[in-house]
Length: 257
Image 1 (cartoon, rainbow, N blue to C red):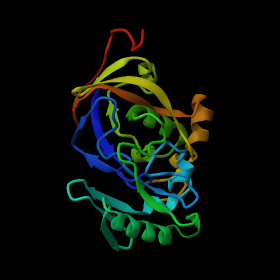
Image 2 (image 1 turned 135 degrees about the vertical axis):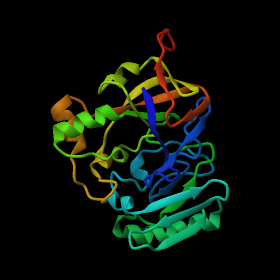
Image 3 (image 1 turned 180 degrees about the vertical axis):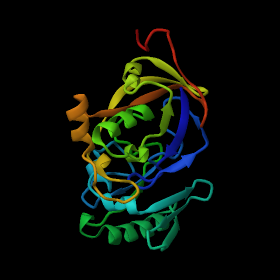
């Protein structure tokens, strides 16, 4: 089994950034993954005391498919976020400053139109991350599972539709579910499989066209009897992870046994 792609998503709901390598830390997500989010005006998120909230409190593809029309690049060294629209317009501000976040939030409110609830805020959580899961986890997807679903649906499914951190090849479809409760080596890091990832309406959005063109959860249920694709892993021991690295399932006892 080999790692084929690595991605981070600096702003929840906005575009993926491909990485050639990353250094994972124990108990953490990918560096800068889901570090920022656009909190809707009625969201009770408190930056002074950040706590996990359901994704509906933030701009996200499950509700706001037009976000897929935007291409974003985050420079973690300078703190600058660039947003490019399909017509070539570019917005760029330092997302690590209050002034920059306010300018980006103002622009995104205009872009979302009636989908923006009240006055949205672009928020940063510090050590908090805006993941769909309350725990800090790494999402891992077997490309063979995507291919199996696509074959049943009779259509191509871009892997970024599923917004995972790590995509891999070299294992039978759905075999990754057997990793839950077991340890596996992901490049130079050791993870524990925690749970399957339940798929929501975000996966109905085509990341290339921003259109809802595939009923993924319904197809998973119809053809496979569940609505899961991919698993979450908890980093037990950090290390360098790179595209092309091997993934090895450990044969020792599951964590906690």
